[in-house]
Image 1: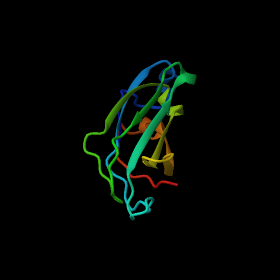
Image 2 (image 1 turned 90 degrees about the vertical axis):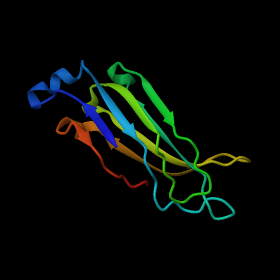
Image 3 (image 1 turned 60 degrees about the vertical axis):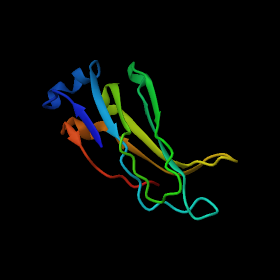
Image 4 (image 1 turned 180 degrees about the vertical axis):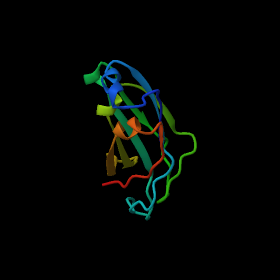
Length: 132
């Protein structure tokens, strides 16, 4: 779930966006139908959210959810992150889902990038995205 609280109403304000900050709220809720990644037919899933805002004068944000063990349809109820973003219409949120392994390197299950341009016309967006 992506939410932005913004006063931007039309294209004429687009240039002002480059020098203004907008708060983006991201909620990681669930991942559905994960593949079996472990020997015993389950997955120990977690997600990483990255927003690299350095080129626009901001920061690089990276947040990681808790690991949900032995579950092919993990859900998170308290994974909400807020980012202050400069020039958000040119920014991209990168999300990846991983399988945690105690004895070896974690394996990436899939990823998706979400352009924040959709927030220019709407102040709140709630959408599911497929992992690739």
